Length: 196
Image (cartoon, rainbow, N blue to C red):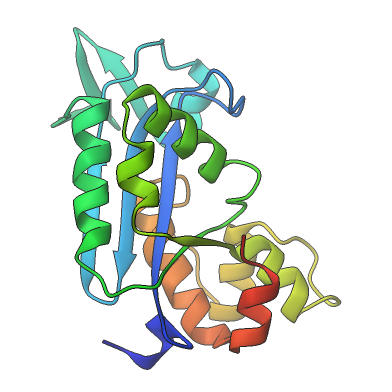
């Protein structure tokens, strides 16, 4: 395990969701991805509600004839509750304590995840691991309070890593976020200040 994937004595797992929209109260999860070191989790799930055109334009995800397509190519899906149960199993494969990091996680990914866990009756199973969440958007602002034009993940990756990537694909997002975190190499105090 690369040293940068451990914060203090905690394992760091990066995760991201793609959803049918930005309203945390009503959007459906379409893709869940996570990474820590070389361990990768990536699963698609068929949404209950239609995917708006704007979301398809950004993510490349659409529904046709009861199947999920990514840029026109069908991808395998699993039911949401099975996807979340698999995600929990993936997280359990790491040492505790666990830090689960997401960019803008406190305002979007974590509330959406919590709502889905509640719907599937998996809240207790998830919180049994006693994870802490880290919002890397807040961490970026904490580490670099000036000189950054935008704290979007895409801009931060461009600024610090000098590259672009397939943003708005959850798997590409978590891979880029892990590399960004490695580059920043934050200390335990800064991670703690941006955790909840």
